[in-house]
Length: 364
Image (cartoon, rainbow, N blue to C red; front, side):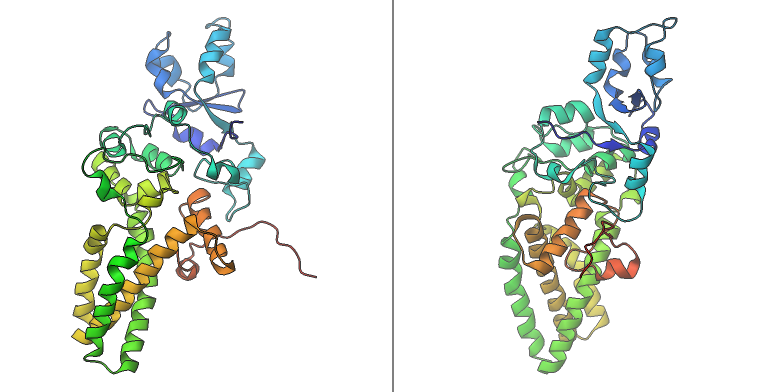
């Protein structure tokens, strides 16, 4: 049984009305991505582009212009990608907050879709984005996508099934994969050593306070990195190199959110991101205090990465089940909200909290 087709808003339809991305509707309900058919249309590309982002029911049935045959409608079915939302459905999709069947920006039509393995060939045929049978990085770099199309597609989750999709397809491939246990294995000894050094120059109570400060500051850094760097979307330069960097840094995780080996941060990438914070800590604090604060921050990172993995792949106790649901909503409902992973605290502070608007059971 095929998964239900995603609902497409009128805004999304209007946004895909160019030669690079051309949607049309039939009977103001079915939505077709005819981008690949533009240059194959017997009547010329201009006839399709004249109706980009619009309904083609009347023109296809127009006896004076050219009444289309049954085979023309069969060809059109090959490009079916979704259903145009009714005003009531669109109101649900665009209402602030969430409800159970409102997967706003990701193209996922229901919760059940989260676990269905993507049909690689059909996905590429329908969306003309990335072929999951081939290395992904070069496809992003050489794909010629514009920013709007790239962001729309990279945030439409796919499921590769077992294993990992090829990213580089060469000797770099192993460097792109990191088992979750590598994070604590590499960094916990470093944290322990940093704590040991800090305690050489600090009394235990000062060390504890500064270490705790580092843990707290990490939660803010986690939020800022996730929102301002990983989701730089609206400010991403409209260039394939920028898309490629975005894809490696975080885009691949939204594109393939259940890939176990591309979920935590590779140690080399973390070193690059953490080095400026090491220098900042030593600029703001004396040597031993800086070590204590920084060690607390690194422990916060380890907790974040391990928690992130568990939210995707583990059966969890109640508090973490709530976080899991919250984080899955970020992936599958609205990636423009819900940036906290280990906590919702900073989402609440900065007004980016994902709010579930489903009716709650009343207590007796």
